[in-house]
Image (cartoon, rainbow over all chains, first blue to last red; front, side, top):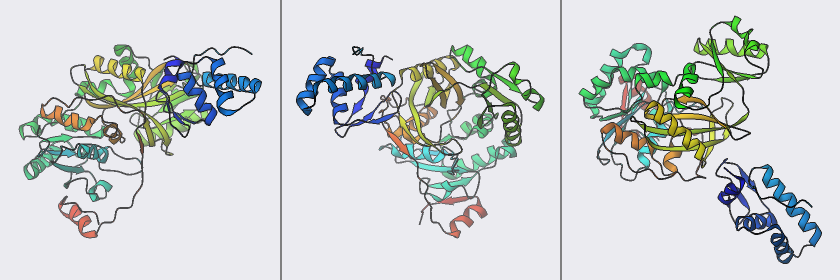
Length: 88
Length: 353
């Protein structure tokens, strides 16, 4: 099963509790992490996710980009995404 | 089968810290909103905790398998006469050969079962896992069977450490050295006798699947689960239903190859590289069977219907994310109830205080 399929199957609730029905593992995501997962599930590009976070959370541009890439790498390590994040 | 007045007997009421599946199976049957029948608890020991719950309408002691088939046959026939028991669901590994041997007698007396055949029971034996894997085209860990402590000191010729030492009926220990292996060997032999199974150790995540086969190669229904918390005996104390296409695919392959009849539990390892290996097959419902009913797949009811000769209800996909969390409770009873079971071997109208 590919990471993107697993990403689509992730159950994420409003409080940031994340359940992976493929492994039975659970995670806790903060507000921005939940936003990134939801945007990735909707098929948004990394650049659009970064712009969205800047607008939604009033965050600084360069740090946001780096943090989003780091988070996507974390998801990849967990087998939860096959999305190729651009190398900084 | 008329769920409104059917009488079903269930064994395995030993709901201890290493629980038998009986109470879980009974709760599943009662979970069906249409079920209004009676449950007869079949118990081996007067102090089995299930004897003192109100899950069964009546409890009867039955003889241990060591007392032989005639003793079991006579006792079950007596229970059929007393209660009108129409279906019996044995739930313990050790009693299956005995119940299989008397199944024709019980059917003549009006009580049906839906059990794996004697051949199927032997086919899934731990010692025959490689043959089962080859027949079903399912990957299994490399293993060998030993029956002497001398063999432990030759294991390094065939395996690298760590490896797994398994008892013929129960128990498994990961061993990192010859010393570990010899201690585990002696412990398993003392508990379960020989032979001992030695398996290669493969790291990964274990999943369990409770499933029912229709006896013709088809899968009636299945629920895959991952244990979330285990006791020091390795028993799942909580678990969660997962989606698992690969787990269901392996379960289907197993059913097709064995034409499995009745309930079973498959223990499957998912390696870190995503491969799936069959570790073990238990020929009966597991103790966490009630989770399947909670996830919308009432496999206990399906087995009752199949035993009766009816078509089982259509099984939906299990609801992933459904969890069980086991609990220990002290049941309060009275010596009157206990003495009734001890003195007469039966107890009716169970009412926990």
